[in-house]
Image (cartoon, rainbow, N blue to C red; front, side, top):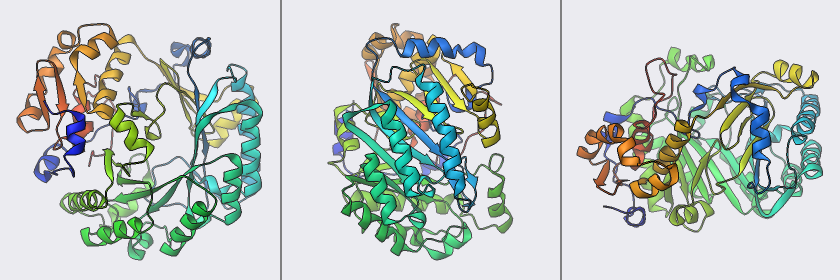
Length: 467
């Protein structure tokens, strides 16, 4: 049976486009299990107060903090994020008043002596906040929490809305990693998706970040956007490689107009690439990144071999959460701001997705939670199985039996039998001791994980295509 080490050493992924075409069905991204589509408004059933007490008992692990900063000056028509479009700068200070209120309410339930191993500023556009407001946010966090010596502090950046003072304020906050939203460098594509971003701005942003001492830079790209072609996306990836980022994320455009009605603009114009052309972009980008020496971490994540993600992958300590692949397993995630998601050992909770509802709850002195979910013992077992596939690309039956406390092969015999077609098509290899995802199957990790998802029944929720 192929080991993960052997798979990684085998070099670039042998992309079988016929198999990808066959298995490219809608599926969750498995940044959590159960997926967020299963969260519900029955907060009493989640017993969140009890979960907070359990999560803050002596001896629990570190904290991971997420702040959702939702404001954008303009709307990118492809975007699936929860955001607020405004040019009113005063909105930043008002919103931080809300976040500070939420911090006070939440920290009353927390052991704030637990070290913060990870902090992430997402959005929206975190750099919509003026530098003085970023400094204020940093002070709010440091007033209540203490960072671990090796804490990873990361921020999402829109190069169109960045100044040198922003970068300096982020460094003062402690930020050492940045993720730049680029998506595509072709002006025609940018115009089609309502996001004009000259490549000179990307160079400028990277230069400022390097000069201020940022240790890691990630570039986000999207394939499958209107007017993209295989040739144009090749040029985009080439442009990005010239910036020498430590990480590159190549996302498949998620067309979900039933969630984001703005995306219907693309359907009316008929400018979206066909599935065949989209597959061509996917294959081309993978080949370019492999040729440039990047390691395929999983799904849409690539990293240089000396990057922390690549090291974690080799060590078998890779983890997956709502920010994607991570090196910080075992940390409890606490999210702040509208739509932010928190995760403890056996619960998820998500804040209200609209600013008025979020503020109304805070004004009443309540945690602004709209939806939640308490995991059953079976949910936790399946989460362990699915995350093994997503992060380790394998299932070791004996190790899983020890971890979940039951005989894995016996308890999940039906699911294992349902893998026959994946084995016949070469996506996985099996022995009596376990299963490993082959290099051919790596692009379809989500499809393999789906076979252990008990919630994927008709009507259980709608998801974007896997590729």
